Length: 160
Figure (spheres, rainbow, N blue to C red):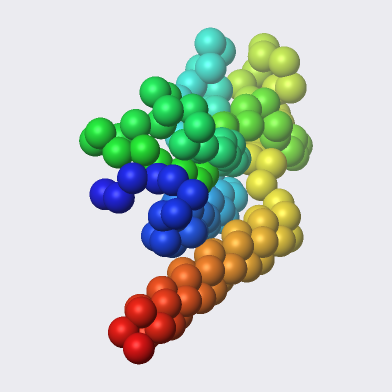
């Protein structure tokens, strides 16, 4: 990889490529949230033996700057851009619906007996997030295309 400095012609492309990567991870999390919108049984039980529903996932982004030299070295190269710092699971945010005959209903003797806990995943919120993530992905693709075009024109100028 090329060193990162003020004269680096590939810096914009690498930063945009890191943006593509995190936006793809964000879109994967969104699709996972939509797919598990009604998932009641995640294979985990609470202390009372009740189902623990799916928890919505959100990526937490973090900027990566070459100025923080020692922290941002990857394979001996300095990286710039953005990364997913962590994938946050929003626990405890559930919708309670009273359905005592449902197999996933809270057991008698527990708090909220007869209630079914559904994940608090809003389809409209996920679609809005998907629109933002896909727009950011497209913007990064545009940056890469324009950077490529500028580099080609600079090489053409150097030849003449």
